[in-house]
Length: 166
Image (cartoon, rainbow, N blue to C red; front, side):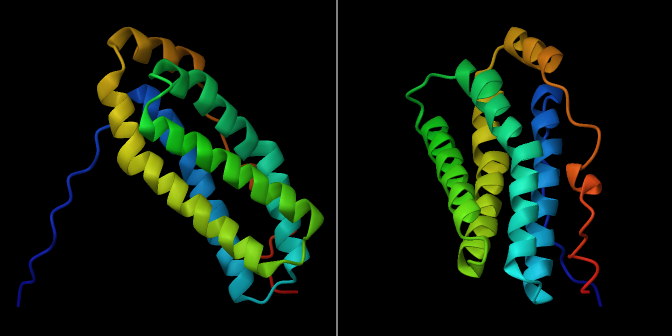
């Protein structure tokens, strides 16, 4: 018996934006690792320490590059850009809260959910708008200035709580 499979048209990204999308992959891995840690009842301090490390070594710079290199090329009053900027601020504020309250499992869960929602918004909505708005010249300049980290910074983190439960 044959089942109809839904047809998905992959989003074709220009190389300049594809680089930001590749960085989003690392963010999605972070979310998965957080959720695995919660499922395995890992002490929240261990998960919080990892989030803080990842934020300092990846997300903070990623947000900055999006804001300076990408969002600045679009009208500042653009509603989608304003939404993304607000989400960056909210996620950063959650990280600052985690610095003070590393045992807050609810905050850890909220952070992973909000980061997931944010990445999917950028991938499914914002990047399409930006890609359709930028000139070829802007895309070429952006591609020349934005290089992707060659690896997941969590590879440098010793406590692989998402794999090991001891």
